[in-house]
Amino acid sequence: MMAKVLHVFKEVEIPERVEVQIEDMRIRVTGPKGTIEKDLSHIRGVDVKVVGNKVIVETYLANRKKKALVGTVAAHIRNMIKGVTKGYRYKLKIVYSHFPVNVKVEGDKVLIENFIGERAPRIAKIFGNVTVRVEGEDVIVEGIDVEEVSQTAANIELATRIKKYDPRVFMDGIYIYEKE
Picture 1 (cartoon, rainbow, N blue to C red):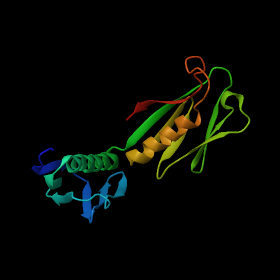
Picture 2 (picture 1 turned 135 degrees about the horizontal axis):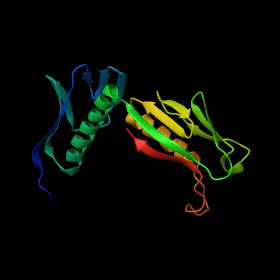
Picture 3 (picture 1 turned 45 degrees about the vertical axis):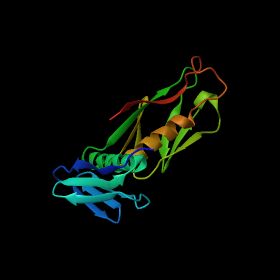
């Protein structure tokens, strides 16, 4: 059996022009690019508080799971702060060999038309407050919440996945090539 650690804590620095509010494990981060709210009330045994210009995530008598939760909550807060200050951008490349692929954004969906000559368009869902635009051979996904941006990019990539063919020969698809 593993021994418990008496006090585990992580500090997250709050930059200027960013405000962090915590109420019953509901975290709200406001910055120049917008506001992100996350409900982490399902996490038990971890305390989160704002002290000066730092967020302190801590727990006492921590076993392995509680230590992991401290790091997870601190990482969520760090990602939220980065999102409201810099934002997130994923770039995807449209790749095709024979049939030219048309990509359009309509509302909260990305339509991928003429993919490997298919008549019906393939559809990828856009999550949350994310903007998707098509610039030539690139699809650019931008937003302030890393989870929404990455899930939207993954949905676009998965919508063009081809099964039962050798991926070395049939390389058609839309692929993530840069994360900022």
